[in-house]
Image (tube, rainbow, N blue to C red; front, side, top):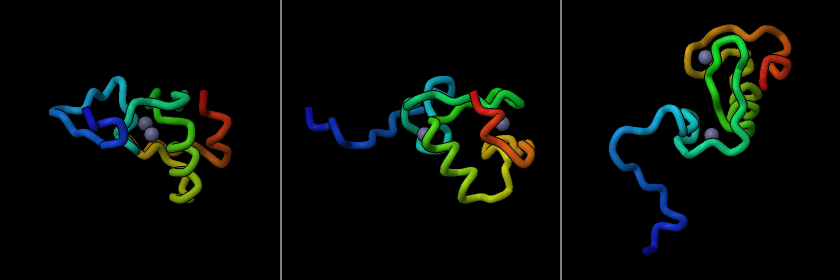
Length: 72
Ligand SMILES: [Zn+2]
Ligand SMILES: [Zn+2]
């Protein structure tokens, strides 16, 4: 049993339970209320900061100038 810190990829990812950015189970699940895609709070915040274009990383919907306000 040495898989405590190992990222295991087993079969199809459970889309409804895992963050598409880090492919891990959500930590502080945060949903974009425009398109209802969900990410870890940290992942979506970091992605928005790095991409600079304020779009959902999954469906590319534009989130406007203040994407933080669309996160729930
Ligand atoms: Zn994540
Ligand atoms: Zn989306």
